[in-house]
Length: 233
Image (tube, rainbow, N blue to C red; front, side, top):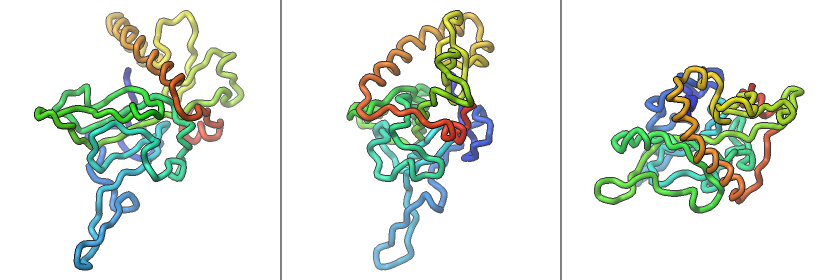
């Protein structure tokens, strides 16, 4: 699946332009660093600090503190709804995108597309190094809001519309396009690529449906005004 990426924190930028290399190894000086006093009363030193950030139609957890396990939004003390434009965790869909700096482990571990449910199993280790120890990493974890059933006067179910990464897309029984693949992506694929996308989508979409059933917290759609604020179209 082709996942959009953002090159800046500005919601107006083209999502296809974002590169993981642009993710800062350290958070900005203010307000996303905490300061720890030096021993002996010296000047405080900035410390790496994790924080929430709204990225287009995603809520992202920025990981500046090295970690070994995948991230669950239930594990942090600071609340994502307190961030400007943030939403409660009940509005997060079960899909999860994990971006890491583990390039030496292979491309498959620099972007991990999976699900979360609120259970302890969400916090699995990402990888082990050559010594068998859990690999530490920084990066980001992205969560997508649950889109509204009605949007700008359109009843999505009645009009055979679905949400795909913030875009309202017609999904009927005629197309073989997986329901998480955008039409613009589908049109650009060769027949061979389409067959591969269909093959890979079967277990992925089953995992999503299973995660919805296993979810341990409420599954609540966002309101229309919130969707608009998240650049849903």
